[in-house]
Image (cartoon, rainbow, N blue to C red; front, side, top):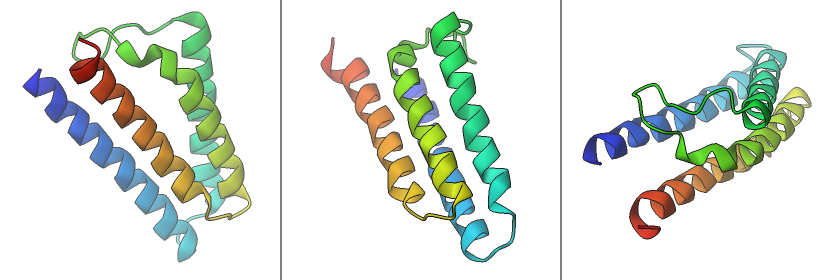
Length: 115
């Protein structure tokens, strides 16, 4: 369980870092926002595909993907964030941070409360 929580903490940090990099690149015009918009749009579509097809049920480290029921929520948040990013609307930041909190809440519920 400890190893899983460490891996999840790394996942959360990476997701926060991606949001921060997206913000910095858009704010200082280092990269065309369309690149990040496409990234989140494709990510959202792939989550929809995985949710519908149940294509991926095992994680990278051989564990069952417990958060499959949250994929559809993440998918629509990512697609909406891609639209906000395309229009350079900085409201994508609280949206993606709320997505991280949704995932974090699901993790805490599944691993520590649901038992």
